[in-house]
Length: 111
View 1 (cartoon, rainbow, N blue to C red):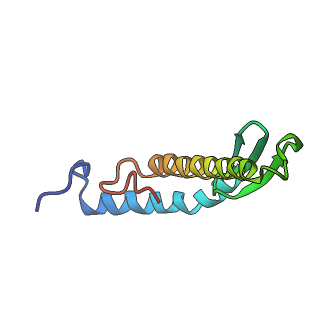
View 2: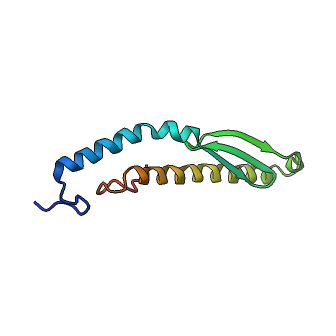
View 3: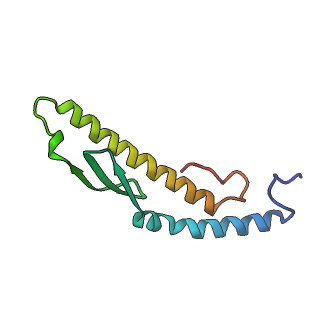
């Protein structure tokens, strides 16, 4: 049987050991991401997210609160939320790649 590229001759035992180590590190990933701070600045709308994609705070400058143009404010808030979530997903993907870079088929899962 030909082993997948990246096994480096270590066989199934070595692969299982790598996988177990990666899983142990991955268990702490959620706690680590919860501690990460992601700042999003869309001008008059600013927010802080954690690495899990949860919004911690949002600040809206009163200059953009116009009862005659609610759509503009909604667009700013949506853009801010979208950016915060996107940045948190990117951070998670980077951290997963750090945990599982050498495990064939595991790095870059995008979870």
